Image (tube, rainbow, N blue to C red; front, side):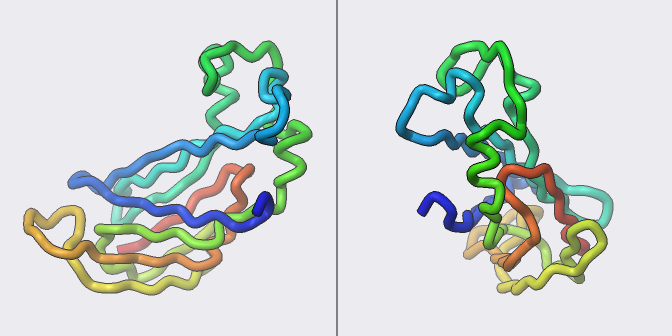
Length: 151
């Protein structure tokens, strides 16, 4: 399970935005106190003609307020724990409330997706949300990445 791919579930608000964090450590020791951890933020936000979905490091900018409310004196995004899960990928991203995309790209490379019609983030009505499923987006949990969903 340690190396299984992750699925991100993104539920867009009425502005077309969403966000969340992922914290990982070895779950067995106190090595996180020495910076042996992964703390990532994932977000989606509307952009010109589409939607940006991205993942970024949270620890580097928050050394004074880590998850357990302690300050880290040192941290490297390439710490031993992060290296031990370096191959763990985002296997799928499911976006609720997206408009129908023309394309999904990662660094200019097209990515496979499936779209099911439904209510989008900018429609003020009740109903089942649209579902955009992006398979194998080419993203790794411990790396900074971004996708562009073109409407």
